Amino acid sequence: INHYIRKLNTISSYTCEINHYIRKLNTISSYTCGINHYIRKLNTISMYTCGIMQYIRKLNVNSSYTCEINHYIRKLNTISSYTCGINHYIRKLNTISMYTCGINHYIRKLNTISSYTCEINHYIRKLNTISSYTCGIKTDIHKVTCIHPKSGFTN
Image 1: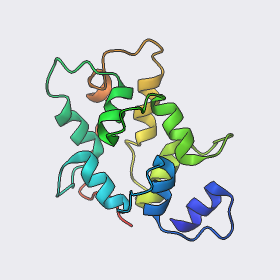
Image 2: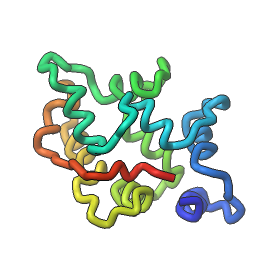
Image 3: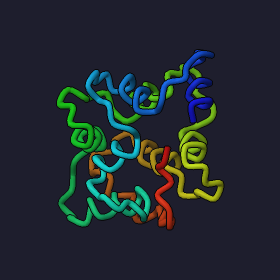
């Protein structure tokens, strides 16, 4: 993963661990926990075994869930001023102006699961193909199924 991040950042001597990378991405100097803890905090599930899609499904069991994805990300990150949206967030994550490999490739490498086929990229792509998307994440969630026996989000 360090090698991958090094490629993303085009810094040959980039050897810090993922938690430092996340810290830089989120511009939170005191953010010192690793990606596992970060994912756990996002999902509030200590035994995260069914994949992010299943968790999102659980979040949206309430039919009155009408927040936009921006608001959803804002709540997850507890950053009240985070208003730039998922696209800008992904751009910041990758810090590559000409991002050509797609987030699903990034997630696949992070998880080292070649059969990870409900890629988050596919889900985000579907969410964002609707320019007037205002009804929340629930709309398309049932079209995506990703229940994997492993979390995959490991260092």
